[in-house]
Length: 115
Image (cartoon, rainbow, N blue to C red; front, top):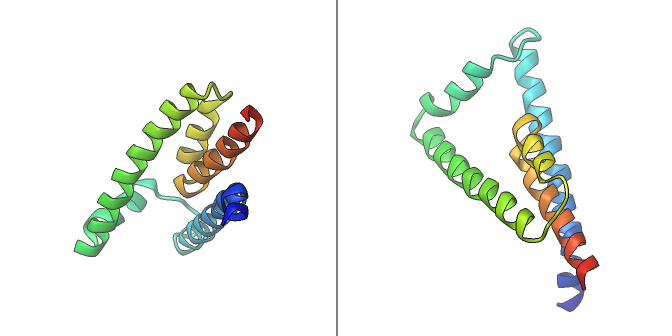
C-alpha cells in the first residue's frame, strides 16, 4: 500500500495522457465530421440540448471543472507553485481532462521536493 501512495503521481500522469489523448481523438472525429471545421457553438450546445443524460453529464462536468479550477488556484498558491496560470490555460485550450491531472502530477512532485 505504501508503494502505491508513494507512486500516485504516475497515476495522475496516466490520467493526463488518457484525458488529453481521448479528448483530442474525439475532437478530431468531430472536426472530420464537420468537414474540417471546429464549431465551438455547436460543440457546447450539443452537450446541453441532446437529451437529459447529456445535460446531466454537462452539469456534472462543469461543477467538477469549477471545483477543480478553484482547487488548482488555491492549492497552487498555497504551495507557492510556479506557473499556475499554465495549468489553467491547458484546461481551457487542451482539455480539463488533461490540465487537471497534469496539475496533480506536478503537485505531487512539488510535495516530494518539499519533504
